[in-house]
Amino acid sequence: MDKAVRALQKNGFDVRVFDTKEEAVSALMEDIKVDEPVGLGGSITLQDMKIYDHLSERGNTVYWHWKAEDKGAALRDAASSKVYITSTNAVTEDGKLVNKDGTGNRVSSMFYGHERVYIVAGKNKIVRNYGDAIYRIEHTAAPMNAKRLNLTTPCVYTGVCSDCDSPQRICNVETVINKKPGGVGKIVIYLVNEDLGY
Image 1 (cartoon, rainbow, N blue to C red):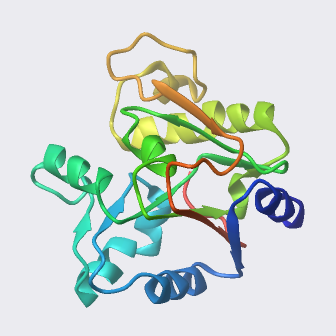
Image 2: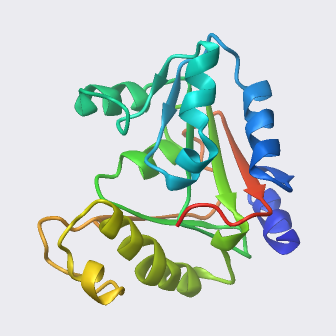
């Protein structure tokens, strides 16, 4: 983790390290004001941390398509929110964020359109390099997410991505954030010394 932290900082990201997810939640609640609207990306990490519940219960307006009746409206509102929180599929030891996404809403909000972005990742998502990041996505994150969503993509049955042509495919957009881009005001990486999400 130390190697990844140094590399992320060198690449322009603000990085904070926490021993537990509870400490990370407390820090988020301190950093985000109660009157700031918050968008959330689809994330088992955020679900496990109960971020939506914590923010909503104290009075923040929170846009999360996982909790909304009108998912399209929630996605649009999240994309234009002042603050955005999500996770990443992989963090490399040389300080890159590697992701594959179904619709692209989560990954695009990581680097454009928000005043502040918080990206939370457990230690299980730290990998050596880009190749290991893609391996992790194709052998862990994508199959597990497809299974969670009750899809019928090949990876649900094989446990491995096959670059399929399924209409339910969830690996449509791939992004690599090499350094902090200029499209957002601030990107804060929260690394947690626990296994979180897929």
